[in-house]
Length: 494
Image 1 (spheres, rainbow, N blue to C red):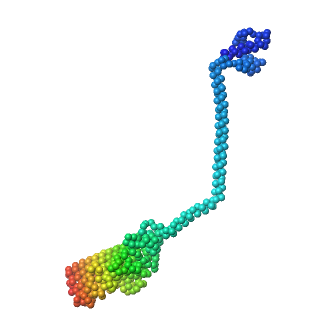
Image 2 (image 1 turned 135 degrees about the vertical axis):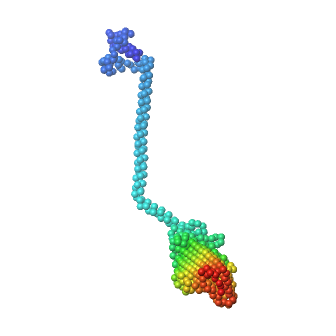
Image 3 (image 1 turned 120 degrees about the vertical axis):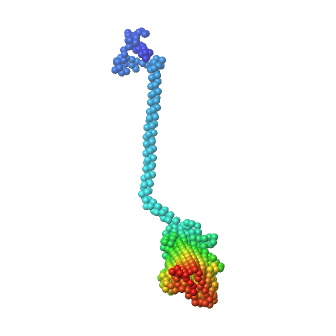
């Protein structure tokens, strides 16, 4: 700073010398003390005021060497700062432009978006009904496709070899329709391709219709109190090897609930299985001919007057063997001829009975069991734990009539019989064994009519007997052992 000040003072003195020779100064005559300090008010006007001014200094007169290092640094820093400032200005300007451009871009983008939104809204407004129609069409298309698929497949089946019958939600609404369409859902039934018709709860009224049973097809309900079928069952022409009905109530007041003749028992199995059934009818309940009839947990109720003839019966087995377990037959019919069980009647084939834990009850006069021309294929009929209770005015609990002269044997254990006549027989060659039983007969414990071919022999042992023995055939015998009366005194056979 001092160098700068000295230099400026020298220049000022020189100026005075050049302006006036009179006032000319000699070299080095001007001292620093002779230079007046700047007044700070007159600016850079060299004609007024005091102090060294810009006009007193020529361009380039001040060199870097004449400037203090500190001052020079400040000047350099100022220049750099000014340059930075210039650069910053451009940066700021760029940023401002950028910000503006961003705003513009955003605005343009928003405009584009808004245009798209406006277009979409306009299209939406214009096509609202179209959209609704398309949605409805899509729904309808799905429904149509499902219905078409159902029609194409005829039914969608949930399980192999099984179809579901239900009032709604099943594959069929009628057991009859399911049986008639069996080829579609099961193919051809056989021993290696067995089929099941499963019937859900409800009442299926098929009055006047008949379900034709088929080999190896089982019909199963959902319970005796849950499923009721109003229909009849029949067998197809020819042999029927094996079929079954179970777990439902069957009602038929127009025809026989079951009328199945399954072919020659020597050439076909002909097996009908009935289980967990209640059968209500005014007609003969089960009319069967085949190799085997198997009934478990079956209740048969017959009431009213038959409209298929003048007789009713719980079960009629024309030929074959009948196995009954926990079967109850209840009859209150007004028909002329009434029978609980009917065995035989076929001219060629025999009929056999195995019956246990079962009963026959009637509030009207009937024959409990008719053994008619019934030689058993088993060699003997066997009854155990049976209860036969019929009206006490007329009727036979066990009626043995054999007009064909075939010998057969019947073994009865633990029977409870209450009937006008407990055992009635004709002398056509039969043998009866009655053991450990309770017999209450107002008329006869045993009654035998004369026959034409062979004796009718009866043996009774260890039983309580009420009633008389009436043997009217000289060739027949009644043998008693260890029997007693209703008063627990010894019972003596005549």
